[in-house]
Length: 199
Image (tube, rainbow, N blue to C red; front, side):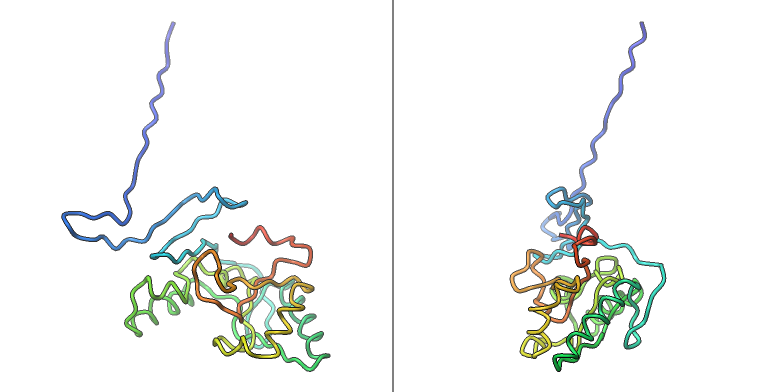
C-alpha cells in the first residue's frame, strides 16, 4: 500500500523588526483580518490603520465636477435637495479618486510637508487604502475642521442616514484616524452596501 505524505510549510514574515540595533521602518500589514464581519486587509503606520479598497472602474455620474457611482450621485442629490428645502447647501468637494490621485495626496504632499509616513497616515490614506477609491464616498462642503461648526454638518448628523450616508471617521474612531466631519460614505438606505466598507 502506497502512503502519500503531504508536508505543509508555514512561512513567517517579520515586519518592523529590529536588526543589529537598526529599526526597520516597515508598516504592519495584516493580509487577513478575521476580527471584522468581512475579511478586511489593512495596513498600519504606527497606530493608524487603513483598510484596503480596490480601485473602481465603472461608470461615474458627476456632481460639482466630482465623480460618484450613479446610485451614490442619485442619493446625494436627493439629500442635497432636502437640505436645500431647509436652507442648507450641500456640495461635493471630493468624490472618486484613482490610485494616482491618492499617490499625490499621500506621498507627494507628505514629502512636500516633510512628514513621516506615520504622521501622514493620521490625516490621509496610503495608495490603495482610501475609501474614495470605491466611488461611494463624498467629502461635503469643506475639508477643514471648521466644518464641524456649520449648520450643514449639524444637518448631516441628524439627516444623512435617511439617505444612506454615514460618517466614516467620527471622533475616537477605531482606526485612530483624524476626525473628518466632511467625509461621508454611502452604505445605502437599508445598509445594503455596508459590507463594502471596513470595519
